[in-house]
Length: 136
Image 1 (cartoon, rainbow, N blue to C red):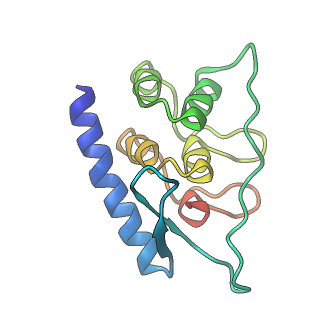
Image 2 (tube, rainbow, N blue to C red; image 1 turned 120 degrees about the horizontal axis):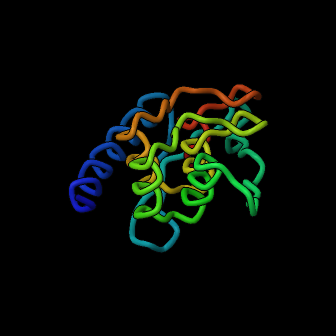
């Protein structure tokens, strides 16, 4: 059920936040939603770079639709697409997976849901950044 998926996602978010803090992330207030976010900084003290925005397409695959749903933070659509067979580890031409998009957009709950559906949080984009490194 969606309620179970949300509870599992929250657990995964907490685990991801713990992992990010272990590798030098810092916790800061969220975007006004009452939560917090964890970010990593480069060795030069700057926020880790974010990938380019995901573009929508009229004729998109399930995986492209999944990245779009993640960008919008639409948990019900994410769960529906994953349930219908969308691969959360499929990457676009720049190597961005749905987990990378979730990290880019700061959608920790989406990241947790994707992890529950088998998303590899350590899969690097072509520039070497992983969802864990770009999470903000």
